[in-house]
Image (cartoon, rainbow, N blue to C red; front, side):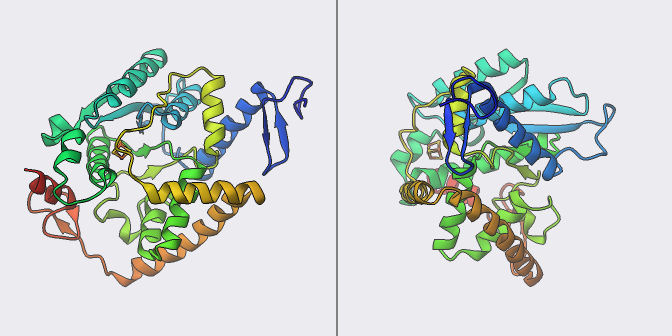
Length: 323
Ligand code: SF4
């Protein structure tokens, strides 16, 4: 099958749009979607100037999503004096996994001549995920600990680096999975947080500063691009992405939802896009409802000073349990 836009051979077919594209035109559509999202979410405000540039911290894990995001941002903005970019990698301390993906991050950052910072659970918290999994004092899935620690470091370091935005590589499948999980769990409060944290106007919602959210506004410029297309882009561009799965990956429910979504998408192309369109609207309404209710009063964690809804934030409670 030929490409819809030229006479070269198509490398992909997108059932949801009906398009067949060659490698060059496919790459162009991925990049265009990311740039449109940046524009539509107003990530680069008019106030950014060469004298007062925006600082974007990019969460770079070394997986295909964050590597593709970093590559496209660099292609688009490397020469733009209104933006400064810093790649931030979190080292969780996972044998046989994280060292390799950190190497992929270092290779990419060196290729792009990008400032790259690495912070580790070991140095910051005195724990490694491998030990956390072994101790497991709260009888929880590994990702439940890891998510709390990672969010803390991402937001803390984004603030420290003076970030105006924290950009992460969540793709369309990730976002549609999260949306469905929130629906199926009946978690409307979480939908409100999701809106504040990533989907809606930045930082204004009263809920935007509860524990687990980031003080620095978050953005997900890849969220219109399906996971398979992100993987194909990484492959075609020969990017140094690390593809091994974390040995502690434990989000079984997310995997189940992911399979469900893939089945839905196959039978009803465009299902993920429709889910997200409806979800964004509902999340905005939920944010308004929960914001007005004032239910989630915040205070400072008595241990570390982080903003939280309890006396001690979740990270400090987990670290106490692990001590
Ligand atoms: Fe951490 Fe879970 Fe990701 Fe592994 S899969 S790095 S344990 S969040």
